[in-house]
Image (cartoon, rainbow, N blue to C red; front, side, top):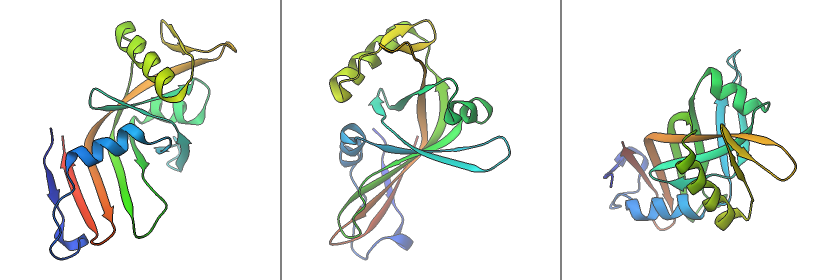
Amino acid sequence: MPTGTLNPDFSSPGTTPVEWSAVEAVLNRAGIFWLSTVRKDGRPHVTPIPAIWHENRLHIATGVHEQKAKNLAAEPRCILTTGTNQLNSGLDVVVEGTAHRVVDPAVLESLARLWKSKLDWDFTVLDSGFGDAEGRIAQVYGVAPDKILAFGKGDGFTQTRFRF
């Protein structure tokens, strides 16, 4: 379990770091994340996408011809964000890391079950990822965090950094 370090420059006086359990709860219950990648020409690309937190990684699935898949193939470093659009309440979480293709059948089976239980999406495990009932094929990526920032909002504002 990572330990959080409070950044006093961006936190209200007298606040304490956000607990890891609160961050993990946000990662587990979030319905949508915003994936930020970089195109080959350096332009940013941001898109909403569901993600599954499993074994200390965020997992996403994307079609092989989608822009995010092309971007991750060329530059696997990315950011996933989630939280709330409220100014004075909630917890926003930023996950910085590197995406790696998931091809292990046992891991893919576990992830397919999680996608079904969390999102009610039915995926079939294929040699290289997921397939769906319409015949679409998705690559699965796991983003192992290098750093997670948690921004607490409410009575006091906090910025907590977790290193991995």
